[in-house]
Length: 246
Image (cartoon, rainbow, N blue to C red; front, side, top):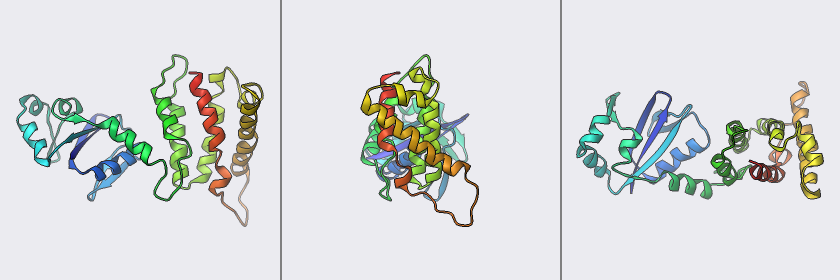
């Protein structure tokens, strides 16, 4: 099987044709991690502010050009740029099988840990559910982006950034529960076990974040390790509760 990836960025789009499954996995990893660019076969591709990501499949590499050249409708929509002709996703969808969801979801499930062995801080299935939710009162885009960046910074061992983002997420969600602060959620929402987990988040994660945010430079510094910033279990419980409230 051969693939074509179509990426849409502000005021532009481009296609990467006749790529292997491994190449699509690599591109999908960059997309899901929120990277602004990636290199493939020595060429740099821009993914900054990406608005659409589509993957199309066909049996043989020659099938791409054969079907494109045999479709006058598709040929009319091609855009010539930098010596290549690019076709928009809606034109490709009429000629090839769109396997975007299967590919992205399979990659997410099979790669919950990165190559260094660090498990995802926030389960990707939680993030997928948040993406599927719509709410007239709350725009979830910043919450989803925080979750994605928590995973990225934790995977990249940027543990200072991870704990700062966890602290920010706690400050971000109280209106969903009709509260003004996360302390109000921790002390008043849910049963005993939920409250205990949220108080752990409120007291421990916030103090660790504040320690690194407000402590001035010293002659000898000790940087955080993953165990110090990993509040993933309590955060997963919080996000599950968020999902039930939107």
